[in-house]
Amino acid sequence: MARRHAGYPAMEVRLDVIRSNARVILDLCRGHGIEPAAVVKGFNAIPQIMDVLVGEGYRCLASSRIGHLAKARARGYPVATMGLRIPMRSELADVAQYCDVILNSDLGTVRLLDDEARRAGKVQKIVFMRDLGDLREGVFDSEQFVERAVFAAKDFANIELVGIGANLGCYGSVKPTVKNMQELARNASEIERATGRKLGMVSGGASTSLPMVARGQMPREINHLRVGAAIMHRREIYGIEEGELAELSDKSLVLSAEVIEAGEKPTHPVGERLLDCFGNVAVYEDRGVRRRVLLAIGAYDVGNCQKLDPLDEGVRILGCSSDHMIVDVHDSRREYRAGDVMSFGLMYQSMLFATSNDMIRKNFTR
Ligand SMILES: *Cc1c(COP(=O)(O)O)cnc(C)c1O
Image (cartoon, rainbow, N blue to C red):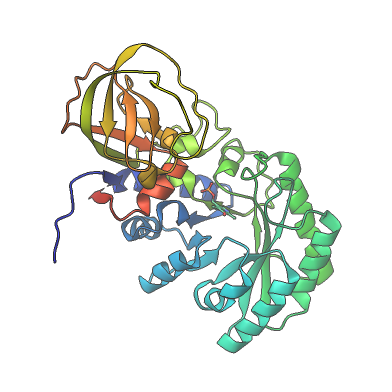
């Protein structure tokens, strides 16, 4: 039975904005001797966006999810694919099939990947990861890192160590600095000395490394970055200062939801309290009776609803359950009624959820 998709929630994908952001980042990086890989995981590898990135000249598409890379391969792009998550041992056959390059940090896994690459009749390129203090993936100790990377470079017939890399600004919130980037560059030259071969790639992080590039502070040994969030939103470049990379826009994606109820209600719950629908002890500020609306969108669509950015400056998101969102509109100039539509910019988490939820209709602006 063919069923017509409801109109909302709907997401506008502004390909013109994405194209312009992608161009700015590509030009900035190449102007500093850096080749950026375009990271597609944040927007669920939406094909129309990947088309734009390849069209602008990115030579590598990257994701932590091998399925995204399989999707890119199936579209026949003339670019390399790069796996960004240290592979599970259970996915090595897919890695060998879909990843031209894969990040790694575990020699046992590299050994199994070597077997898998042999079976697939290929040489698997890997990038060995150093942990510079952010405490997610990578070898933490500098000497151990160099030793293991040299071992990975020398000991496996079907593995080629093409580079090293580091990830910052994720678990540990650690900022890329001249100091930690120089440490990575030093590791690279130690490995090159031990193997007698040049490393093609020294990958100095993600979007948060861009301000260092823009300021001309990135050590010249760093010749690769993996950039996702910044292609979509300037504000996802934490640590960027006012005026820096001002050509980048935040308005790549706009999510719209429909008002299903509007009116006045108290701001403080009435009655004995348990927990909210997610098991949290919530805190409610009593601001008296105020105008508010109920939207037909919720955590199911966006994860944490506070990771939305209302385009109407007079509205404030109060909370959500799985399928409803409650918004204070008391200070808005607009008079909202049921049937009206409210729009939001997205932050990383809401982008992850909204782009991969096929109950949200996607419209593409060229
Ligand atoms: C997600 C990811 C990136 C891209 O990060 P952005 O903040 O989206 O630029 C880079 N490297 C690794 C290892 C990642 O997992």
